[in-house]
Image (cartoon, one colour):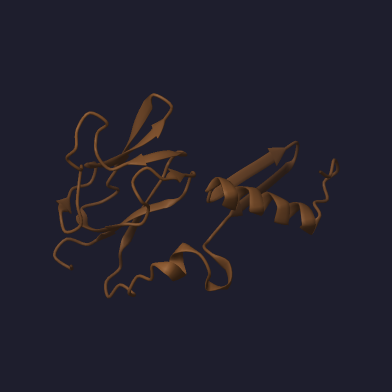
Length: 143
């Protein structure tokens, strides 16, 4: 890769391909006096999981719950079979919605606000990257 401050478009394409392969939605690369942020916003050309599993446009403003760390999504505790939440359940800000497993460590995925669980956007057991959208929440009483 380029050692100077100029980054070639081919290098950006390679980095984004690596991010897509790894399931990482956001990366920040910094050096002395340089900072580059890349965010993958979705599938290109309407291909991929978004096209295969279309979601109707929400009639109310929904809140996306995002991954604050890379990891493997768990929708129930590793020692239990009952999910933390299911679509239609009302949650309060700070409630545990799931877990992100990193090796033996499990980090909680918490509700950023009060609302109603609309749907998981990621399958349980999927590896997610930092910033990946995990779930949609609708305002309470609007679903």
